[in-house]
Length: 90
Length: 178
Image (cartoon, each protein chain N blue to C red):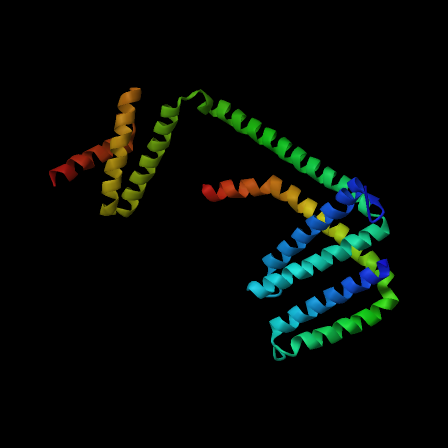
């Protein structure tokens, strides 16, 4: 069950990202973009069988890294942002 | 009550709240960086991408067994931010007050402080006028000097001890004559 959810989410994510990129780049006509995106997502899904565990680890640790980066940004801005504002006022 | 084999509390703190947090964070990052462009359809795409990405990340965090440490990390972050703000606030306030005590500003009344600021302002205006000899500066100068005179009268200060003021006064008489 968990593998199925994971692979479905991977499929959805790869479809959405490839669709959004194709839409932004405007290489192909608008009608073809979703079809190409679905095909890319299926390719990604079929390839993910071999490295799904590694992908899971990378995703988990990258999210932790994102959390730590956010915490550092929060502390940094709480320390130095106020002074910058005061300088602007002067 | 259990949800997906987890107690309600564990589900809320280890799954739901981190999911919400990462969803909002990723959505905000996507929107701010404008990687996928702008517009309503792009906003929908951004929200869908952030939704799936946050679901995936929470799923992988849970399967790695790291989701239990997320609430602890959140609590540490909040405490660290509060401590940083508190320490910098108290230290900067203390330094500011110390400076005021050394310079004597701490013992001045509000009116005296505003008189001092006005005095500096008028002096700067006069110096600017002396340098540029710009006639357009005269009108704002007269208004400012009037204010300064009123303040000086209230506080019992003598303005003629400042050289620039006496010079301005001479000039003022000339202006009135013209």
